[in-house]
Image (cartoon, rainbow, N blue to C red; front, side, top):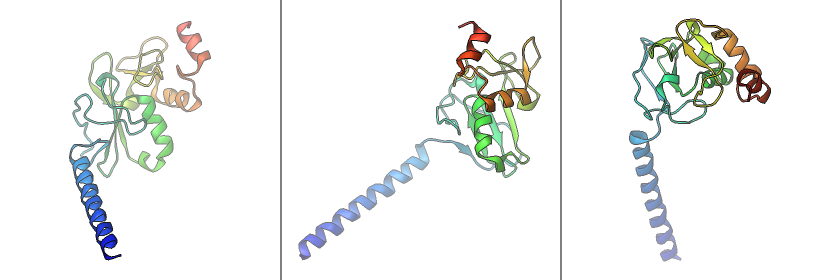
Length: 169
């Protein structure tokens, strides 16, 4: 009985050590979703695959479609697609208060206030929603509020009727 108890305690000790090692390694080299301490609410420069989207967990790889949401507390959330920002905000309404949203534009490849951007509906965005930001308005572009409403209503390229009417496919 004593031998079984000793073996069990040894096993639990080994498992505990492995769990501590795995947790400590994952914090250092693991998946990153949030950058903390950005109290100035400025865009955090990104490298491809450095962060994961806070909504869909895909790697933020194509930086021309990337977006960042920065809360008043200085937490920066990263997104691979502006549509993911809209869906994430629907689930995290508290984060909306005084948050700043920035997105990269396809025309200038610069970060701008997402609410001042114009959005095409037919882009090959990472999640396939079709929205991509531009600095200047062009024909058939929509503003942020229209894009947000379309995302929440499912009126994006995921909808086969929308896709057919916009792309003829």
